[in-house]
Image 1 (cartoon, helix red, strand yellow):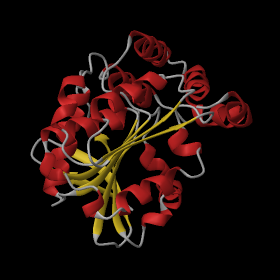
Image 2 (tube, rainbow, N blue to C red):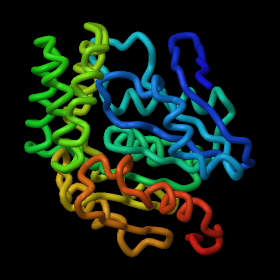
Image 3 (cartoon, rainbow, N blue to C red):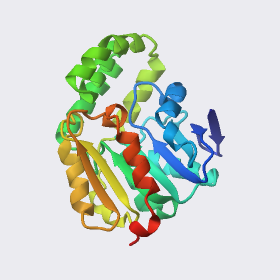
Image 4 (cartoon, rainbow, N blue to C red):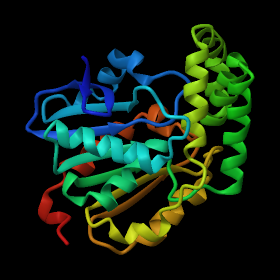
Length: 271
């Protein structure tokens, strides 16, 4: 169900489900519309976590400022987690959510027990910035359908995109001016993101999941994180091929891999 946390200068919506003793926090990637509208589908996707975990998925803050860097997104989420009494969580961040997750794990290690990063980067390349600039331009021109089509084409392999092209066009009809403005602010917040030198401060076990055909960040983004963390106890890397940037939604075994990593005995990951 969707809930809202209200602090003195921060309001943030989130969904929660499951009844397990362990805590699983999901930070979603950039989206044209809030992912909370798809709460039932998300709960179904992560159904395997229901018994062993209490699951939280956080949206970005309500009432975005004009500029909202990833670092601020991460700090706001960390504040919300603390206010809810969450600590020592299993944290999964996808795409932009993975960038936030890296910041939280480095800056607030007491909040994160294990970290999984999906289709993300420790810094933004010029190629990735060009993709973001295209999306921002379409959003600011009010071209909702073109934005959704470009978004879908970059996130999914060609065959999958072709199957759902009409669905993207239908979804675009429900996009508001406020949605497009929000999207542009969030996308621009990724500019200048770089935590490559902070990866050494992440002390918990880490799983990196990527795809060799990632058309948004490129396969090199996952390998760059892996290069910094490889050889450390508890580190794992798995690369898909053919599911694209949104492998976290389309790869059939993705949630099983996450669950297996988070369920692994603590002594296996001990530092």
